[in-house]
Length: 528
Image (tube, rainbow, N blue to C red; front, side, top):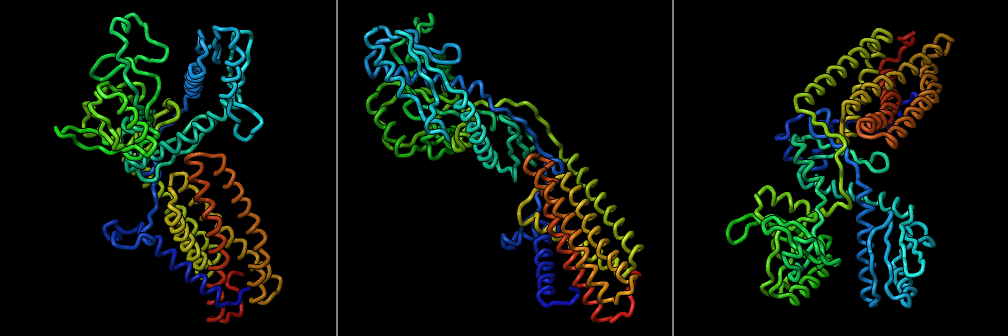
C-alpha cells in the first residue's frame, strides 16, 4: 500500500492543482478575477452572521387561507345555482362550512346534484373528495375535509417559498436562504440586505392582482346604506373613494406574462403589463362588451385605478397607473412578475445583523481557525518530528484548500457554525494521521521492517478511520435534513470535510511518505 503507484500520484497532483485554482478567487480582489471564466471564478458566499443582513421568520396564515377557500366555494355555489336557474337564499359561510337554502322544494335534489359536482379528488387519494355535501330537506351544507385543508396548507407553504425566492432574486440579493420550518413557517435569511422593512414590504405583500368590472348600477345612497348586491363587493380605491365592483374576475394576475416599470406620456411612473393568450382573449372580450364603462384594477383587495374603457383593448397589454413613485412602480412590477402569494404571511420574528457585527464574526472566525491550525501544527511536530509531523501539516493545508474549493464550486454559504465545522474537520483529519502513525509505531516496536510497519499503518488503521468518518457523515446528514439555517451550514461544512479529510490523511500522506521512502531508503522509522 505504501508503494508509489502512478495513478495515486496523478490523482493527488491533479486534485491539489484544481483545488488551488478554485480556492484562489477567494484570496484575490474581484477586479482581478473579473475577466476569468465563470467556472474558475467561483467564490464562497458568506452567511448572514458573517456579512450582515436581514432575518425573517414568517408564518403562512392558514386560517385566512381556509376563509378564502370557503369564500371561493360560496361564489362557485352561487354561480352554479344561478346557471341552473335554481332560486336560493341564505347562501354564506356557516360554522366552518357553506350553507344555502333552496327556495323551491321541488328543485332541492337538482341543487344538491349540481353542488355535489364541485367536489374534487384529494391529492394522493383519488377515491377521496375535498368537500362533503349533505342535504336536509331544502337546506344544503358543504364542509371541507380536514385532509383537503392540510394539503392546501402544505401546498401554500411550498408555493410561498418559491414566490419569496423569485421576489428576493429580483431584488439582487445574493444566495438568500429560504427554508421551511415546521408545518407553516418559513425562515428567510438575506445576506447583504440591510433594510428589513424593504424586505418585509416586498416579501409580505400578497400581490393578488385582478381586473373586475365596476357595478355602476349601485347608487351612492345604496352604498352608504350598505345595500350591496351579493354578486358585488365594496372596495376602497386610492383616489375615487369606495367603489362597488363585481365579484367575478375578468382576468387574474396568473395570466400575466410580464410586468415592468415604465413611464406614461406625462413622464409619470407606471407599470406596464402583458397578458398571455387566454388573458388577452378574456380582456379583449370584456372590454369590447363594456365600452364606456369602468373596470377596476384590484391589488390585494384595494383598487389601484378604475379607468373607463374608451375602446376595445385587444392587444393584450396595458399600463397600471396610480400615483406611483419610481421605487414603488419597480416594487409592484417585481411583485406581479414573481406571482402572488397563495396566503398572507405574518412576520413572527425579525432580526438585523449589521455589517460591523458580521465583520467581527469574520475576524473571530479567522482568529479561531488560525489558533486551531497553529495548535495542531505544534502538536504534530512535537509528537512525530519535523518529517512525519511536517507531512501531516502539508496534508492538512491541502485539506483546507480542498474544503474552500469544494464550497466555492458548490456555491455553499459559509456561516459562523460552518467555521466551527471547518475547525472540527481539521481536528478529525489530524486524528486520522495520528491513528496511522501510532499503528506504524506499534508495528515497528514489534520488530517489523520499516516498509511492513508503514504498510500496516495505513491498511490496519483504515477500518477505524472509515468507521469514525462514516459516523460523522451520518450525524451531519441528520443535522442537514432536520436542521435549519446555521445548523445546516455546520452540517454542510462537516460533510465536505469528511471526504477531503479521508482523501488527504490517507492518499496525500501516503504519496508523500512513499516519495520520502524512495528517496531516503531509511533503515529505521523516525517516529519510533
